[in-house]
Length: 370
Image (cartoon, rainbow, N blue to C red):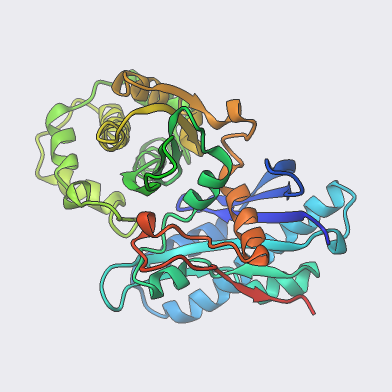
């Protein structure tokens, strides 16, 4: 049987899909190839509209479900061609889908990812494992984050307590203690890039602040930062997860309406970078004996944000996951390839101490190509 899996990951930034071809034939997975494929602009607009209530959204969701699947499948087929692989060379695709709503709390909590796995399977000729989050929610969990089970399997170290920090649209951490008898922890810390990206798009007409250069020009507004950090989410105990339903441009602008005028738009951008940094650092500094923090996701390329994190995490050594042999851009896609591998291997894909589920479970459902 093939040990090659493909992981598909599209996060809260909604800018496209990350595709990783991964070989799980050895203890440490190896990456054959990785690439990010952008969404068409019209699809990005449609996906953003689906994150908030609107008229006719069920029809829009149905159309977007098929459109996202078509982008995912096209990306897979391109990667197969690029690497001279056939569909029969791949054991399965692990597809995260595109989250459009995430409301996990309460008896009727739910999460919604689109990107029809049936269509992906038909268009690629490869079995698809998808719908990873809802089993965990059915078991009383948050359905997120799911990468910690992969992080534990690959990154545990017997002498160093580690944190894997993913800074995507939303930031989340995995705490892996060196003592195997202690529980692995993981949760969302709050906004990652989502607010910075939205503010940059509004004022610079650019999708993100390249290298954090715009934020680096300003000075943080201490009072505004304090107000932003007063949001109830930051005080919640773990397990917890969040999304663009909570942290979005309108949330920021409502707070700015009742705030004295800041010096400039770039100062707001600087303050948003500090919001991401401080909310992450506050959580990591509360953990026991963290020696090393490894950063992945788009935030790892924000030089200003990384500098701020170094200043706040003075007790830890800060790296990107590249030093562990896995590029910071590809880690999340690899995690969903691993979740497909875990499904096939009957390995639990969740960690109850992370998500709050009442037991371990094999996550996902199988969507055969035939």
